[in-house]
Length: 256
Length: 256
DNA sequence: TGTGTCGGATTGTCGGACGATAATTCCGCA
DNA sequence: TGCGGAATTATCGTCCGACAATCCGACACA
Image 1: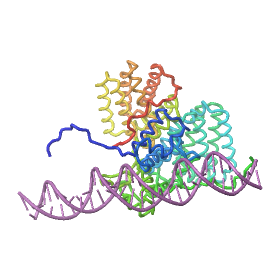
Image 2 (image 1 turned 180 degrees about the vertical axis):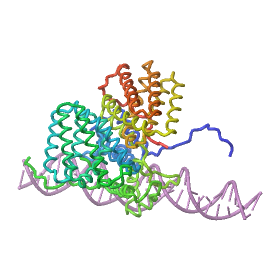
Image 3 (image 1 turned 90 degrees about the horizontal axis):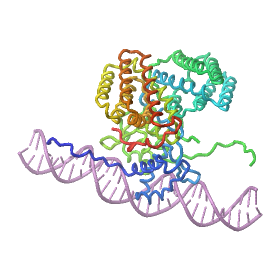
């Protein structure tokens, strides 16, 4: 083995199906095709790229999976805006595989939720506030059913995310939220005073948003999440244990 | 159109290739197969699932694309931990397609970076601090080259992310970081005092981390990002304009 | 207006095939 | 006996051709 001079870059042939996917992706991102517009049938792509249909299909699958293209009613492919939950579930999955701890989840959620409610307090529209009020009212009605309360809690936070008007923030927090939700459910089922405290916090947060009181919003969001943490520990868990695979959803697909 | 009673759930048949993907994914997430362990060859999967190889291939492509399985040197498929950047680029792409504004990016980054440096100040190891010092030293050396400084800035923030020891936070901020980086590059190229101010901020942040001074860390991280925003505006941009497709990387694939 | 029917288009799935390349085995030679 | 290189095998990427199921649109019909 002579010392080989690094004259050549390591050769790396990209498989055709990836090239297909990247070519289409580039066109979409460059704005050549706008969301909603069709990108042609498989047969057409076969002709354009000069590869076999199987290859085209493998390529298309990737983009379809990412949600940047979708099949319309015609079954024809069209560009689409990837929906949040689709991306979020991937990231959530990664968190589970990486065995992140609840502490990490707690810390990150704290930062994200505080920023979110800050935005919501500043910019929530009347419609969003009405939706939040409706959510809180419903929560009050099902206070005896922990699972239902947990579900509404999840919805509440999603609504606040929307109300914040910050999509970057929404995208950033959704993966964590997906993990927080099942935990909340577990906590509420085991900590008797949980639902009442949760409702109180939601009411205060909503009130802060209504009054555009950023500081009060932050305060109650913080308390709310601290309740979550304390409940988690009171339910007999260690904050430094990794989140485990309880959190795989039954069907991670099909978001209408 | 009469009011149709919602008696039936929308029918939805899942194609076989998706079932294959989901079946494998479930097994992995349930912990049946740990990262690094092989999944079996395509031929074996064909036998197990009783479908055609084309179908199996379409299915495993999806998981491969998500990074939860990978081909080893044997070419055999094995479970793997999805790496951050792979997920991040998807989310970044979504942000571009959704035409999020710089303001949204700025706000979200602020929350995420403050939380990150907080974690770093509390938990950075000596090794991480050394790496940060090395980064700062290199930055000082290339101060005349805006592009190089931008690159090192990106690295600096990645290092702080690692130093924070919070992977949830890291996963949450990476997508935004991917968008911040090209902007920083543009700003540094146009704002003469940019590099010097950036270096100063990095030094202060590093110092705060070294002294475990959370408040100082937050302060300088905030200033640093405010500089970014001001530079952005000084460079003649409007904070409320959508980020555009300048940000698609040349090759969004292959992370070793 | 609502309903059956038909043809065409498109997809999902299949079976089989070939070459390229990495992994493994085997064999001749020192 | 041990080792380097050749032969074999395994596996993947790609291709081809095919078929049924399904959906869309159009059209005729009640």
